[in-house]
Image (cartoon, rainbow, N blue to C red; front, side, top):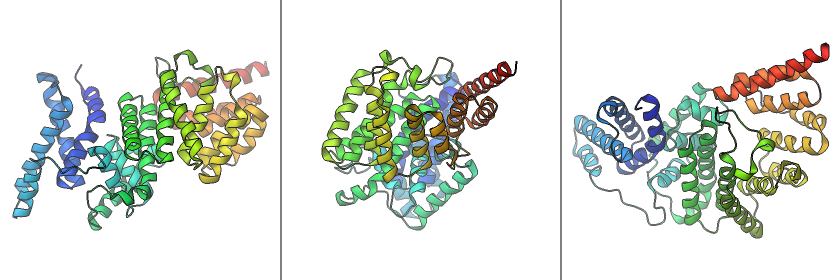
Length: 403
């Protein structure tokens, strides 16, 4: 059925490609974004009657390009603008060392003149086909705050006249950290939103980066991380979309080819002895995927890796994940002490973790309250229902104890 949801899925898969192609040609974020959105609005009107074209992405790009040409011609009062329109009819010059429009756009948006969070947010908005609300959830901030951040980033690009070009070879290492963050957030957004196309796009971009920078351990670490995460993706949710906890996942369905490739990359990183955040996260995933059963997981090694990660990325989310591992070694009481001090009130997994620890300690009334708070913050209906069930179970335990 061709409806808004169907066209929306195409948008998520193809809009980044189309926007990147137009920005590469005209160097104007707003015009490119508006043209692609208009193309999808036209698709929503035409495709239900005419059918989906054989290559939807090419149709969107062509329609967006035509819309941009028309707009430039309407606005043209000088030859310069007409020249811009002519640029759209010829292929953009491709840099030898970055051979993908979307990858080039990521590096362009991740310019040092922009704050790091603005770089990541803008690239997610443009490349990932994500709404402002979805980008806001990735950053754990309000949608209104994210909208302002995106506007500021675009204004900065215009005011500073940041060129839409690939950085020179010597600039690439300094521009790399936000690029890696973008690719990983695209992947995690695909997982949380149930959108395999976003996951595939992130993996493709990670592989392209690894080809571009074969001697950079953090690039290899990112690729290992997304591959190892992808190896388990099919087992992370039930048919109704509700999450399956790691200990309950069917490990026989994990993709062994991806696991072997990820493990090989982790070993390569270890030999380089230049640890970074993505390498350490990949190493943690490697330990999980190396265990034949949940009971055989080497939790002590995972805690050690989280200790290393905290020395270079001391974030509350990392501390929360470390606490989960601590619970498997020292018990829920020790982990709860660590969790209670974290400033993550707006993060649903903080409350879900706290609820689980409280439930394991028999503090069912508090657990039920924490589950309800987690459910209220959860990003999807399936997760909300899963957490509501946890809250109902905790309340049932309390009632049985009272009886």
